[in-house]
Amino acid sequence: MTDFKSIDKKNVLVLVADGSEEMEIVIFVDLLRRAGINVDIVSIKDNDNLIQCSRNIKLLADKNINDINDYEIYDLVYIPGGSLGVENLKSNSKVKEIIRYFYNSKKYVSAICAGPLVLKESLNTKDLKLTSYPTLKDQYENYIDELVFQDGNVITSQGPATTFLLAFKVIEILRGGNIKDTIYNAVLFDKLINKIKVNT
Figure 1 (cartoon, rainbow, N blue to C red):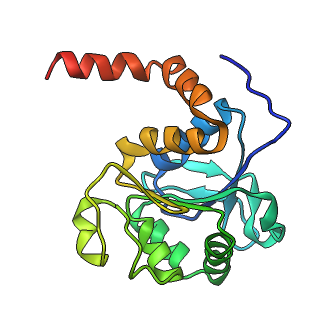
Figure 2: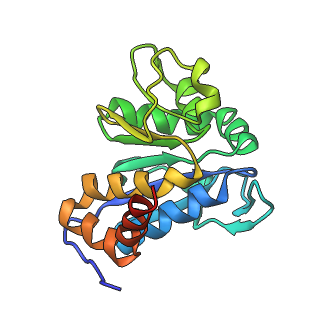
């Protein structure tokens, strides 16, 4: 696998809680790290970095939210879905503080599946167009039925399978189209899409 290095290092903050959707964490983090992006998985549990995800897979976060104060080093904050995880994230005041900081600083904010509900809890989303898991569309004033959708500095996506597409979008934004295309092909996503096209 190609090892991408950059003087202009990009940093991404992934906030996780008990009940977060593991596919939406691991796929996203894996692809960004392949693209040479530094990703910190951060647990919101009080002084506990071990997360029990939505399908009972245990995940050890890199850092704890109590140790994160230097938000300015990060270029994007990401919120995965998972019903319980989202409820835990929504109730955490520091999560809201971080999201508001990123949004107001014109840094990127991203969420997937039920994750945009955390954005709704943290921001005034009345004029913000976003997507999410389709069954939650009535929760938003301006729901867009797209697999991945970007409105300004907010990037949202619909669910576990679209995590790949969201990650490729983020890679393209942070590292450029050439690196995105290289990762896309290296993980054989190009072959998968071509196979689907042939069979439909």
